[in-house]
Image (cartoon, rainbow, N blue to C red; front, side, top):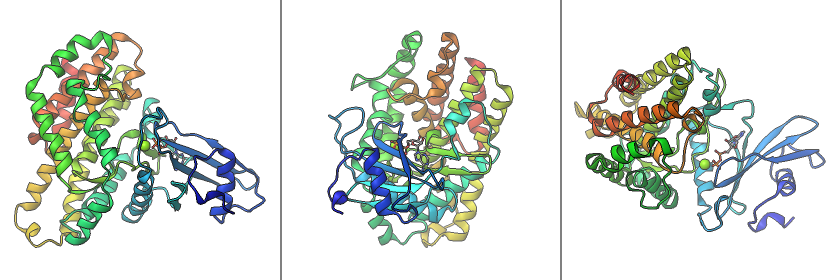
Length: 402
Ligand code: ADP
Ligand code: MG
């Protein structure tokens, strides 16, 4: 069969033929259905089910242009990065990544475990569902996937070859623009300000020169601190959950960057969920979200310390006080990035449903102002955040003041 020897963008019928040829658990005569379920801007995600046995898989294929516009050309190398990182995550944090059955560098796709028995965390949070094990799971995932890929633990020549392997210039450029630049100056003319909040945002964000300076420092930290192999897009839309399980998907933005980028994204997106719950007066959900935000930071700290103590290899990293200094930097990056994420999701073009689904105008204005006041403090005072309580105190204060 010569059909899959040159790259083309598959349709449902092609995907059915493809999985029959490539993986052994479907019989050649199986009665398969395929449905495209992708909701992103970049890739195609197919859900394939065997009508007789109920067995299923996911095929994710990268196009060489973005789904939203043929003018946006993107290297298909991102699906290779994603497949390799998913495999690595499965080894480093067992149970927290979908299994990858096959990566195909001709068709630029991968075949992976179907997680349809899980729900996308953001969707569940929008319904005010709570997940008692989330803080435990996500803190374990972050410590176990991030720390072992740093120079603290990994042999330094191997680490440098990983930096090279995971160089991801195009997707990094997206973050450099959308997260680190446009929210402060709209230089690409595509920010979207909620009309009723426009004047307030222009004053608080566009005119705050001190904020711009701190964002600039963080931008160069993102571009120059090849600290660990980070997920790069760890928001609540990249988490699949049940009451018992947490799985992380979609690491196509992965590269060697600051650890705080991942931790900060998780914190920011949990705050969006909290603010959404607050707008709907869901007190017990808000209480759970507060506790979870605080627990994620504290559990991350505890597990980070423990993992460091049992795994550190670098001689100088064992010097007294170095671990505390290193973790302090990770936490200030975390606060800074959480602030940037909260800014760009309110001001920039890529929004989150947690905020845009708030229909009442006054409530949306309040939700946005809460987010942006938190964001400004996270960014400007980032060196003062050490514990879960430090983060939570700012969140609670902003809810009172707005
Ligand atoms: P993109 O990179 O294009 O944003 P994602 O990896 O986020 O794509 O996947 C888009 C959607 O496809 C997810 O929100 C989810 O609904 C579905 N999906 C992705 N991976 C899986 C999986 N392993 N099992 C089930 N559904 C999946
Ligand atoms: Mg994606």
